[in-house]
Length: 153
Image (tube, rainbow, N blue to C red; front, side):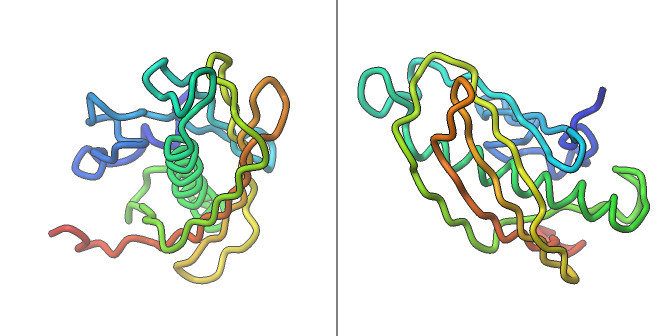
């Protein structure tokens, strides 16, 4: 099964969090699970904040890229289009709000679940939660903005 990020054009696949072309990045992969989206990611030992716990910046970046991927998939779905069809839809972060509910343990695979709150024009608002062994540890909201076709040109 193809992840949302597998549909990104190569020229727009260099993001540290979700770009398949970034050898040093997270390379997250996001999928539909009913009306929610899901990403799984296992932090490496160097993602440490304090011994035994995950660095908060990593957790914020997971929510960020999960949110922009969810925004693209949700917009394609809302338009009744298949992912990857022209014109290509990519989103960037307009705002990111992250709340740390409890320390996230280093070791277990993390599950990030997202849900679309709003689609309004070129803006999509996504709520996302990070779970460690089924326990919510981080919540976030991403305001994703559709990238103009000439972005970065």
